[in-house]
Each structure stands twice: as structure tokens, then as C-alpha cells.
Image (cartoon, rainbow, N blue to C red; front, side):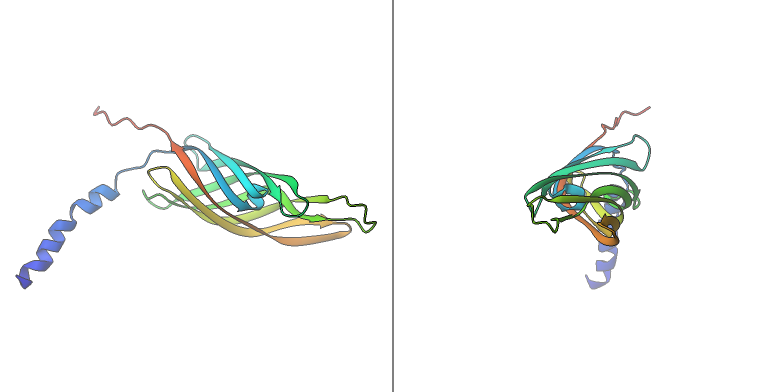
Length: 170
């Protein structure tokens, strides 16, 4: 029995590569709930994938912790799929809320400081539609006379819709 065990394991694993090689259909759109710069600090967002291209556009809207104040974000994302798996690496360029400040005159007003950021991250787009994404990078904003480099972070859970794939034989 012991000498047949390796052969049985090899034969039992043969269907696995066949299942893993089935191509996933392309993502079309996604919605997210999350936190960080891309989601107005705490909020939601959406992403639209360009057909046949590794590019997507995203927008986010949420509530910033101080205030509270409404904040938004928008940007472009370039994704690289790792083989035929649901794993993706991405880089994005965004305009988002980088910080809030109150003036020295104690008027109670709250200033929103928007800036441009670059971030890199990872997304898991499950075949079922469940999507997990996280990333980080650096952004810039002007606070009064100062120009600062600030962290850009984002983490979210969402749902991705995929294009329908025809399985007809031709």
C-alpha cells in the first residue's frame, strides 16, 4: 500500500490543473465599502473596468472623521492579473482628500485639502463576485504655505460583476 500512495496522489491531483486553468470572464464593474483616501475616509465607491484593457476608473464618496464632512475621490487604476487566477496587483493614480485643517482664527470652519496620490496594492476578485482590495502609497497636498507628502491608504470589501462568457462550441 505504501508504494502505491505516491501514484494514487498523482492521479488524484490530475483534475486540479484542469480546473485551475479555466479562464475567468473579464470584470465589468464593482462596488465597495471601505476606508481610506479612495473612499472619502469611511464610505463607498465604484469601479468601472474598460473592456479588453487592464485599466479601470474609480470614484468614492464618504465621511471624513473630523467635522464630519463629506469627501470624495476619483482615479485611474492599472491592474495586472496573476495568471488565470482571481489575484490582481494594481497601481493607481488618484485625487483624494489628504487632510483637514481648521484656520488659526478659530472660526470653526473646516478646510479640505485635496491632493494627488499614487498607490500600489492587491485585489482578490473571487469567481463568485466577492472582492477584497487593499493598497497603500504616497500623496501630496498643500497645507497653507507648506507642501507635504502624506500616506495614501485604502482597504475595502465589495462585489464585482463579470461579463458573461459563452461556453458554446464553435
